[in-house]
Image (tube, rainbow, N blue to C red):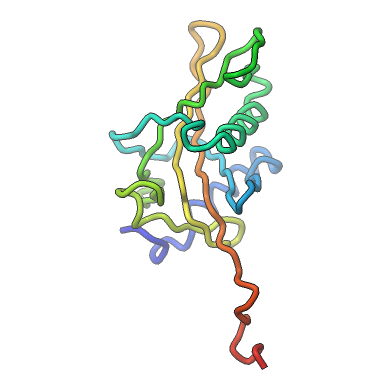
Length: 177
């Protein structure tokens, strides 16, 4: 199982609806170079036992900044989060260490990351009403809190690359005339 043939984008469509109900402004953010950051709740997601711990700055500083900005906005009412290079107190530093998964199962449907061998076959999905994307990374982020004894803040993030329409190819063959 994998790909998009048998699921018709159900994962992203369902999660977009869930996120829109919770907070319509946070369903999807556009990223440079036609990437999108999609936040998702962690319930109903089955993660495999194997993952890689990745530092976002090792991927790129832009990736770290994007995820950091989003987490700071997402958790602003829960905890003050500051960058790992900032010299400030009164909060928790986001080090950029995340768990990167090759794939995950959402309602028994497999979704994979294009950057990992085991997730490559299930890397395509749909977002925003059938917009095709390629899933680049699947991250599970868990942020410790300042006060001991409180559960960590946790979220799942998918980094996706939107497909670009080629401006030279006509929509239909008869549009070329």
